[in-house]
Length: 236
Image (cartoon, rainbow, N blue to C red):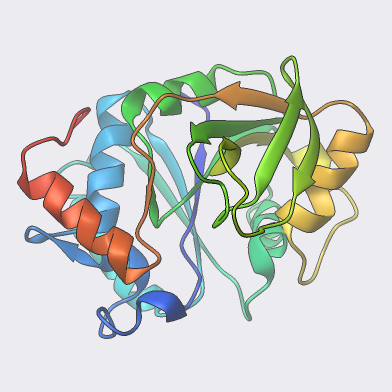
């Protein structure tokens, strides 16, 4: 697929620092491989060949990992790096990349610490931008809730205890560079881009049926390790 994937990999990973401190979160080791490699294997196997790595914290280590993978799974891929001068937030990181690398058009955004399967990547890539992947779970308390009407997103609710079941933001998006026109500096996609798209009645929800694992906290990092070593790495 020609559509590029923007991989958000610049955060400090403070919640995971108690168990992974020597490498940035996307390089957290899982059964002898960095977590990021599992994601890239899925993307490449599904035909994605154009990757933008949005970096800041310990960017040299991530670049070194990706450069090594050019000799194997990334051999035929186009790789670009965007190293933000300071932490700019999810939105600011994307805006900085669009401007500094002079990219215009549609693109998929993923988080380098979140697992979704191959089928989900294809659903998002083939959706109509702007769109967000959403997953239905039994307890949305940790994530906040996405309210929908048909295929449109109507609102984002803040995290709250005992929130019950519902749809959550899966951290995978398809957007267009036009959505970031006039935006610069530090800002958040979740707070500064998505609410405006909701007001315009343009932001679509793409329901995904996938194992959703965010390794940003030690409990889920351990869960992913057990999941992989059990031989259930569907989609690889």
